[in-house]
Image 1 (cartoon, one colour):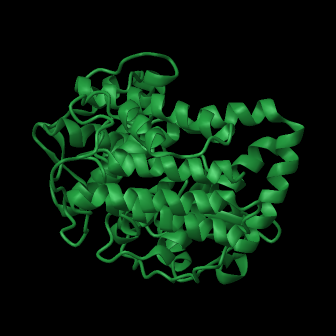
Image 2 (cartoon, helix red, strand yellow):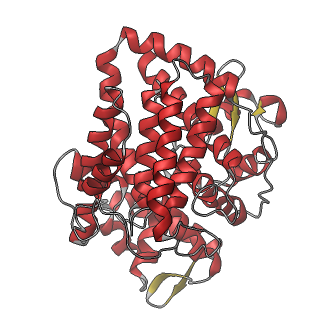
Image 3 (cartoon, rainbow, N blue to C red):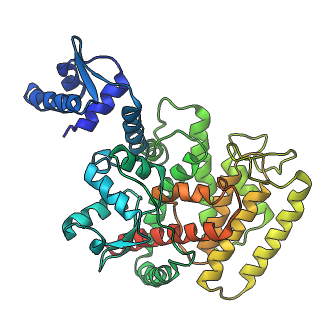
Length: 414
């Protein structure tokens, strides 16, 4: 069914005036649907989103309409429903939810069914984490899409800060549940890993500026259909990262340790579209675009610092059993230390994610993806941070791991 946001998205891209029949034809609708679409045009006109002139209807280009289009574009890129998410009542809910570290129906003037509906919309889009089912409790990580959604409908986006150790108990419970569920259904878990791999590729590379949408990433990697309108390098980048992830998954599953050669190989596979730098330690100074406060190691510091990090890693994995808190603390340190060593000219962050996932997966912690709603928190606690803060990254990792466990356990038990 065509919605007013579908109509707006088409008309915004078109730019020029359109007659109602042209809009009907674009959506391949019959004359029976003409009246409904015409009423949508009138509704959009009433909201001052479009105007009517002698040539038809045309979108008004202003700050609010530009914001609306960017929100819709974000949803399309990430294969989530803008028709569900761009809603005034949901925006009010999000604004109130942001004020709580975790929230339940008692925190809102809503009936349980509506509360459950809102949590489900956000959770299935990766924009909320369901902490418990009974009672239904959740948390919403801050991100610019939800901020823009609340702002578009005139709401504020003040955010509550959580304690660094807030999710350890929930992670521990979900881990125990995961181990039982996986033992009972290993084949299904393998399928889940494969499904999440594509999402992780899309999310990870979108952080590096790759423009390919999630639907097109699925077509490319699952159906082997090369999408149109993208540069060859962008396509190769996606394909190469899949090769690196496949190798990492195999290594982690077999409990292979991370060595310097392992890291160089991951980078070589991931950056094969740039053979000059793939798998090679850099020989020049580098920085993070947009973050002058990020300090990367000097060239003469790379080898000593990398050797020291791997020595600490070997000491860590040599222990027979590491408690959950120690694992996550070391993972945050390991991630940040490697990223600040920044051993390559490019591709450091995607390689950092690979080796951090390797570390956690080898410790029986099934981290398969960084959920959409946590991507910005993750960036702002790593290469986007003005000051290194392992504790902050540790908390984000807790949320990422808990979100993964909840989603995996839900699929294993269905």
